[in-house]
Image (cartoon, rainbow, N blue to C red):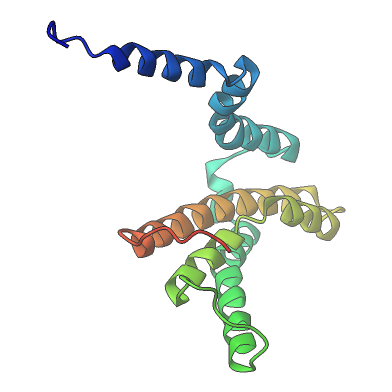
Length: 167
């Protein structure tokens, strides 16, 4: 048109507004709060319910170190070793787009086993509250380290790879 106005621009703006408004306010709120709930509120809730009195010196106690290493080292070794055996025996195969480094990253993420670890520690050290506290510190530190290492391995190994949609 002669004055430079695009007659379709208003219509496109209206469609964009309509599309944005078609999502309910509750759904927008849910989507907006999800990262906060998943990465801040739930971990704080779990930590509070674990009943852990966090003391920095307790992280060097033998039980805390053993539990943390079990989560940080033992879980990835177990996941990768048993996956390797299953693949070698023909029971399983690596999924499309997954290599051994990605599997190792997933193995590290398996070390986040927070809830079950607390349950087992509660059974193992029920009569020894001091050791239970050390085990809980080890679970927390091992879980945090496992999450960090697993995320780092996956970020580095998957960088630049195209996303493969599941079938």
